Amino acid sequence: MNAAGEVSLETSATENYGLHAGVLGPVETLAQSVSAMAPSTSPSLTIPLVFALAGNATWFVYLLATATILLVGFCVSRFARLSASPGSLYSYTAHTLPPFFGVVAAWALLLAYLATGASVAGGALYYSNLLALEFLHWTPPAPLVLSVVCAVAGFVAYRDVKLSAELMLWIEVGSLSLIMAVLVVMPVHFGMHIDLDQMHMKGVSFAALGPALVLAMFSFVGFESATTLGAEARNPLHTIPRAVLQCAVLAGVFFMLCSYAEVLGFRGETGKLSESTSPLHLLAERAHVAPLGVAIDFGAWISMFACVLACTTAAARVLMRMAHGGLLPSLFARTSKKHGTPVAGVVLSIVLMLVATLMMTSRAFTGSDMYDLLGSLSVFGFLTAYALVALALPFARRAMGQHSHVVAAVSIFTVLVLILVAVFDLRSVSDAVHARIPYIYLGYIAAGIAWYLVRRKRTALEAD
Image 1 (tube, one colour):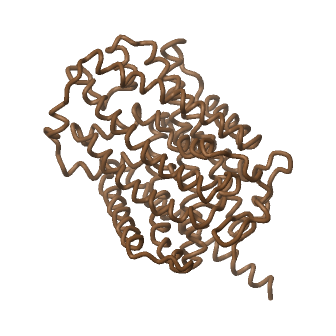
Image 2: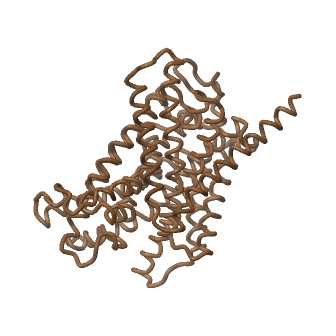
Image 3: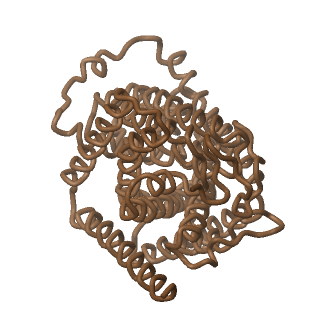
């Protein structure tokens, strides 16, 4: 049986959980995944961290990350061809594997979107300070910046999913276009030549590639979030799988180009790429297009906002699907009759993101600290959800009479790769704060399972 509001190859939905059905086209659906990744922020905040570990192999690490994400994308897109639901990866798992796995997938995916949203809110704070110092020579109060970013994102997410998708689309198009302009100008200024040090991965410690891969993976997480629009995308069984794979491929190529260009551009600089607060700004100055550097910093700030919006949109729909599945109170299953959005889910998502960042601010964490720590937490949630979907895929296809040994082999291989990435993540812990993140995640999942068991027992007693 498919819950109301879900579409599969065998049935069509009679309801859509109160969401506005079929209002998003292919490009707007793709915008959700692109914005959830916030690709324009990685060249400034993530690639320098990867370079600190991988050096001249930074581009190669992103190649490995792209291959890993394409494996996940293959599994997610195959599932998305079979069914579409606002619960996305949670619904895929819950409909196929025993209830325990569905519960884990639900709580893991919810944390992943919420932690990513809070992480990029911290990133927005980082860029607010950067731009304010450059132009106004002061920094605005952190609570004010975080409150404004979260409030505006929450309002847009509540107001209209089509409006939010179109806004995210234009923000990302503008920001990515500025970055590509710098990448095009650089060879013209510095001359066309191949960086042999990068091609030969000179001076690279291969033991550091594992931890670097974990950091690179954070650049991609959220690429699957188009699957949360299962009730709102037009022709979802075709639109969503295509958006997921397109996002993975385009992002992979973009990140490899940026990492190669940044490492090359910092040759001969007195400062290191890993220590730069705004590497693309510096490269734009070296290429004599300094205004583009300022525009990129501003575009990255706006992109952070778009990512908060995308994560709010995704988390609210996961909350709604969890409520329909009995994991949460029915309050979160309700939608606005006028706007067709899950109001309670949007409000809770924004409040949790804001509270998390404000608590970190009160403990003297900077915006870049939030981006790093909360992003590291979100990776565990995404890896869990990705692995469970890959595990469930062969069973779902078998149930529909579409069993394939090739698909089963790819699914098993994907699970093994994701487990390996998780092991690298655990082994890459560099300080006491990061060392606590896995335990925080496990405690959160344990609490989610306990909540499920309590609600199930209460429901059974009420039925008797």
